[in-house]
Length: 614
Ligand code: AGP
Image (cartoon, rainbow, N blue to C red; front, side, top):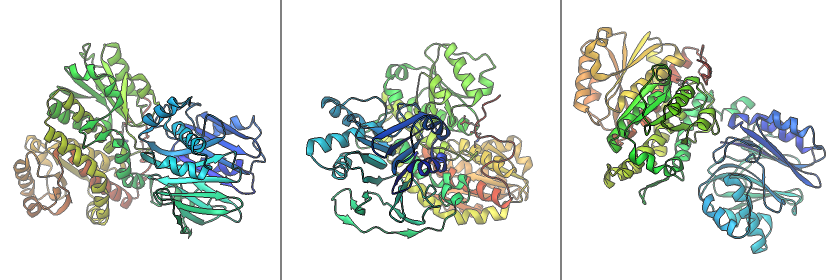
């Protein structure tokens, strides 16, 4: 998720764009750049934050330009670096682009362009796109607007782009598919941005482009909008938005955590986009494909992580052993690093970390490497310390996660893990085509199903109202639902400060059932997979001790419903994916209870987003 800003009008573009980029840094902050046109176009870009770009710009002339494009990056293809920062320019230097999104088929386009004499200085998909636009412009003799339209009809992926051609110095071309793009309409001036926060102080007249829409914004001819496919002229829908700056940064949500809960459909889609091809029964995770021999012959996998990422590791244990028949053990990184573990050459160690900076996990990675293991990382922050330290890896494409409580990071970690389980099973011949197909089809359905689950937020809020004053909670699950129970408990305790524990449901009779009374709400993840009859008897045990029972069941369940005080339904889905779906209502339950208790959900007491110290 990146932030793009553009301006064309009569103001000095530089301050408008720089201030706008600072407003968008919540969308990405590993590198930044700007292109200004007030005569000769020039591009300034740097690894680091917008303040680093300002330092760079202070040594260059930046005043006087009345047209410009800016970008603050959240790397997906290519690590954070000066050369990978946007804007990217075409080989001729005449066309500049800023882009938010992912071009899935950039590799095949890059190959064709290379065969036609184009060269590339960065590792990004965006540089491929800007050179495709130049190739179309030159080979078909069309203007920049048409070149963009034709190019986008050949692109697969998601984009919000702003494109500038020095040969058309009075216009900027924008286009949108899958990533947000807002246009601010001023008096003889136009603003372009990923959301309205960069221009709300200048104008509240806004056009939010819809998917498959593009526009040519011209100083002389105004704003002309077209459909990308078909090219017919469209009538813009100009709104007068009333959102505050703070609300805009949070996407209109009250808190970053709620925004990020609602971003999960897109985050999961972005994570499997370009990697999972259901009809072809193909999984393409480059970090695995480049080391097939390692994964084909591995005898044991050890997973090291902390917190929520450790819970994702537990799901991986169940899935990898089930689908790929590889022995897996999951370790707290803090324990692994100090207990002198037995790691043999040929072992694979997988480190899971949203931030890629967790001190214990980084130390565990280094120890595993010293002992001869092949270390694979699953991180969300491209170019983070853990990502750079591992031999290979796969990024989640969740975008920046600002809320301390991990939500979209967890479900995108599970998305990567599911794809890995399928690929490892396929590689080792331990998963049937039918099983592969079932899990893959259910995985691609998740964004829609999560979108539907989020519509029941008010039902969850009502349950939160009833239990917000509880002193303790228990979360129970069996099989894949055991890690989901642990994660649900962690979400509640870390943002509402209510003591909550997750347990394997069958463990209750080994002690914890002594805790049960009418003051103990118990959340049971009781979907009809695996050990359904067993979990029903577990529920009967706790019901007979007067617990209040909040059950998460498969839609249409009748048995558990009769035993529960509250029932939250999730759609029927293959067992391995229940932790993703069941985490949605549990995230919301924790969020609403914490809000009702007056807690700071985005920055809970005593917690940091990334634990970079021991
Ligand atoms: C989860 O909600 C917490 N924020 C915390 O447990 C987190 O998962 C843990 O600190 C690990 O962080 P990482 O994924 O960035 O390594």
